[in-house]
Amino acid sequence: MLFRFVSLIACLLVLSSVKAQDTTQYNLKLNISGRRIRGTFNQNVLATKLDFRLENKRWSLYNSTSYRYNETNGTTIEDNWYHLTSASYHVKGLILFPTAFYHYDNNLMFRLNSRQLFGGALSIKKRWKGQYLRLDAGAGYDITNYNGAQFENTQWVGSERKRRVMIVHFVHEHKFFKGKLTFFNDFFYRHSLEEQTDYFYWIAPRLSVRVFKGLSASISYEYRLENVHLINLSSDNTTLLYGLTFYIGNY
Image (cartoon, rainbow, N blue to C red; front, side, top):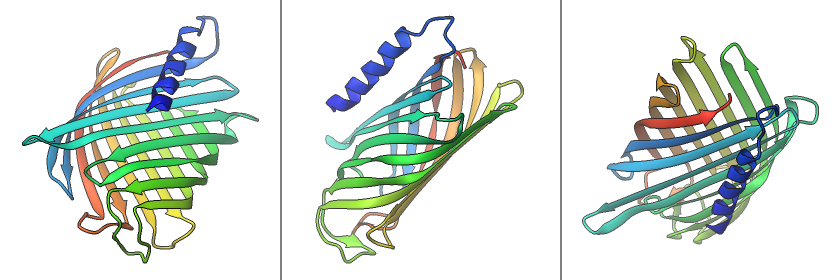
């Protein structure tokens, strides 16, 4: 918890020090959305998310933090944090540069007490004619603590899993009609190097319409599949999101 707040404060301090004549680019996005979750549970949930991105010709920093809370009939269904921080160094431009990352989340609905994933990747990034593309491929170490010990599709038993993993992350953004309409697609894949059957992937296409400068409305569909999962939980779940995004930045 402390690390997440320190990371966010550090990002904001860096933002406040950026001068107008500097070539540094930044953006800050606050998203407030409703979520319709299907799969293990059927729930309508209010969610908040804060994204911060800062970059120049040599390096880039990204921080994403979200929080969800849901209570039904006096029972807490969700009290979930999600946090991702990454830092990249552009050695020779935007082709094959190193990236380091740290990820934390917990999820009561999926009986996930905590998950920490950290590691490194080689990355490619490109911008052209209203489009943005980024690909990260690398490896890391996953430490996950579950609320339960019996799993499907594996012989492994125990509430804590420590595993080496490979990861692939792909992002594509395409703007239409002078930026009034934006299509965004996000794909993440994680595969354990300890077990062939232990893999996870997440796909999230999103369509955003600019209402006016600094405000847009969006709708997104998320598909989540985890092949090794706790018994009595669904392996795949979908989420429909609809909400507003507030934006400040110089790109």
